[in-house]
Image 1 (cartoon, each protein chain N blue to C red):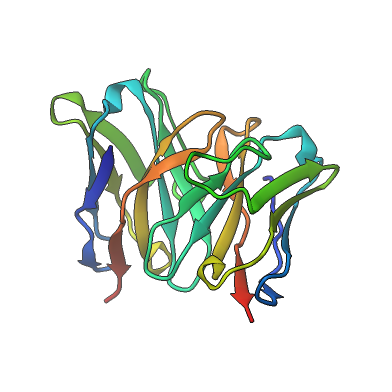
Image 2 (cartoon, helix red, strand yellow; image 1 turned 120 degrees about the vertical axis):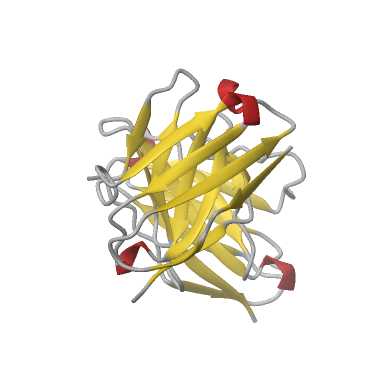
Length: 116
Length: 108
């Protein structure tokens, strides 16, 4: 079982980016997948969750700007980042919820840098 | 929104016991999970549901949750235990995950 993120990079403030998280060894359609980010030198910050039924939730800091979705045919979860700000700079991890909202499988992360 | 408080750093002598706390309002009513993160690596789940260890996690790591404080205990500390440790809960009232600020464990 594995998660692999991609799509990060350097983006100007106000720009958009789409992150991908490809799962192997299990189905994203049957799982709860979260995005968690970590700003440089800082702690972990939960960002969003996509339930198997399709419902999604977001942290207050990204609500209205970020959108999570999935493509079951590609076994991939996406995080669309819009209206990016400098404080969105972070490594973005994809993580699978393994019960009781504990994250039992993590990807290696993808770095998003928002700077002019 | 729900807040979790961790000490910035904890130091422990080699072979001794380290305790890392995670404070939150009535945290005992929530499931607390703990993650270990080494520099440049993704977090690893080391404790779930207050005190359960995933397979492969040594028995030296244990945890408890009571009142307003959850505690991760690392017995017989080893150099390889040096890492950041993060506590996490789920705030069901907002359907949002919450992490503590993380604690850097140094083994002297």
